[in-house]
Image 1 (tube, rainbow, N blue to C red):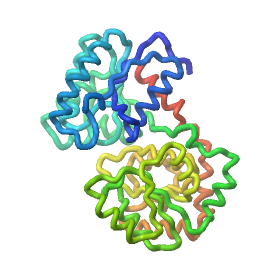
Image 2: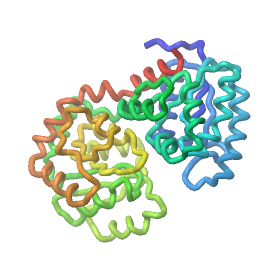
Image 3: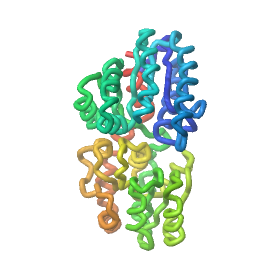
Image 4: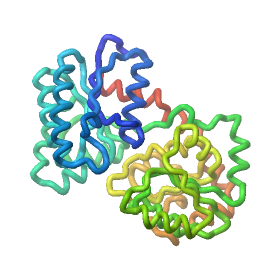
Length: 364
């Protein structure tokens, strides 16, 4: 694809340190576009204390006004605007003045809706529904992560133009064909290494996973991600109790690649309310891991209709244990079933394809 290097894109998004799914995607998209010659202007929601865990409502509102001054300075000099909108009631309302600014200056804007939070905001807050419909309908394009999320939002809002663009894996997270024999050895290795890579919070199913394999010498569980304050005491107690569980903290790209390469199974038994399409799950898929996860719409869409149904679990320790035992007892069988689609996953979830598809939505 050839990009238009004369059309400047204003990105109003969560960039931050790139250490969560949304900001990571924003940073990688910006870098990929710039590397392809697309002129970029950017406004970061994290600037002036506007985003992040523990930020007060007052600070978020103040930051919204400060960041808008920068957006206002850029708006006349751009050809199109790309948003990763805030999806909470307060967050969406805080950006209405930004959307009005785009309409005033006749600048087409695209909303890249990461996750299910906007659906929940709409369902749970009647007073905001008119605003959501108005600015979804006025958008040049609205991007959903999966076809199921697109259908759900289109039916719920009853308006707007929606496109589907799934998340991506970095190039270094694509299992090299020459490494397939090594991966096959890892799949058969005992104890079987399981990887959990996400935030350590109860709704993600981490504690049920720990209860399923903790103390079981057949398994080794590696946990990577941020531990939330409310969960730390409970999590630390599990770590002290079970010696076959190791916490790795927040991992860099190189550490993540090594972890996924050395893991036979990636397990994410999440029932997180706004879970959509976890990047870590895509990365594990592209690194040839057997995926054991819940059957949330975004996860099912990501793995594909042909993915073995017996590898979907409920968020319950007993069921997780049963499925992991099934994989443990016949690892090569399940590896064959998931690895046959590896080249398709690599094509479908490449960063370059992700950047091209987003650009087509924003700049067409």
